[in-house]
Image (cartoon, rainbow, N blue to C red; front, side, top):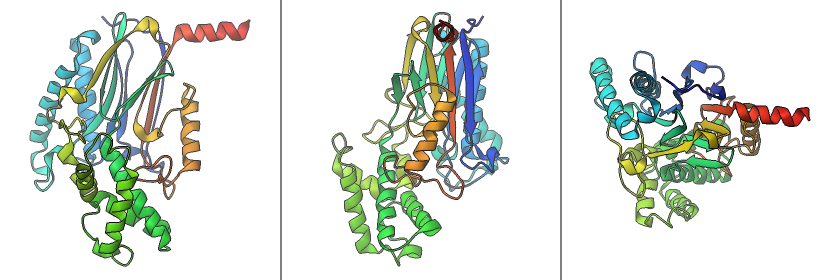
Amino acid sequence: MPSTTSFDIGFLSLAKDPQHPNRNEDRCITLPGYAYAVIDGVSDKSGLRYQGKTGGQVAGKVIEEVIRHECQTKQPEEIEADWLIRCFVERFQEIHKEMGSTLSIKTDPTTQFGAQLVLALEGQSSFRFIIIGDCGLRINGLDIFFFQNPMDDICSSIRKAVWYHLGSQGVVGTKRNEIARAYTVNGLGSELLDWSEWINEDALQLLMEVAFKDLEHIQEKVDGSVVKKALLGGIRKQSIYMNRIHPLGFPCINGFPIPRDLIKQFDYKTKDIETIELFSDGYFGCPKETQITNWEEHIAQVEIKDPEKVGDFASTKGSFDGCFTDDRTILILHSKKTNLKEFSKMSS
């Protein structure tokens, strides 16, 4: 039997393109008394579709199915991260067999389907939290748990360096965004001939120096030669660090084993929890307050301050042509006893 939940639940999930909500690769799970989760599907750079769904959407659906099944067969406090990973691997293998010929043999199988997860399991007297990837968690508006992927910083620095270089060359608008994104994906290892008018071999060397200097904070923990290799390869080469114990290693649920050191699992006593916020990385940080409206106000300010995402909120993509940088999802649990306290204060 599940615990009787004593939390009010609210959530919001929006696609980066408001005109195409069906392309949202985030998803939310709310099973009161059992489980709450935010899943962020990883965009497949190949652009392939699987029965009309993106690879990130397929992965998100697989993860949701597994979590729902486990909650039907186990008590929430019995569910462990290691066991979930094994279940994910088995289900992904089944999906590969089911789709068979629809999978591209030219595509790295580790990158066809992938997603990040933050999961809260509601037991009788405590919550178990499991985080795999860069979805985030905040408890009581103070304790933040968020995996910072060093490859995101590296690829963001590529884009920022190219973006400002193009600006100095008088390149603006859609073309500027297209070129910056192309180098972010392909890296600074070789000249992209379509854009050689603005970025030649000499410019590439300069961009490497600029991006490398921008990553001094990473070089405190990661050898400079490793950082340079990643700058040369860009997003297309980041899968070599996926689910590996490596200075640039990062976790992703993609149907393959994940080292335990890349997974967070911990428990909190329910009596010590006032609020739980689960969120995808599309919000670029957290607001001070804990209502959904506060999260939307926060992203609105981010968009005003740095819409291109080349400043304080540097990213591998920016917001353009009416589209946000990324899909975004927030799921919030507010303790009902907290709400009663607040009502009592307002009434006195």
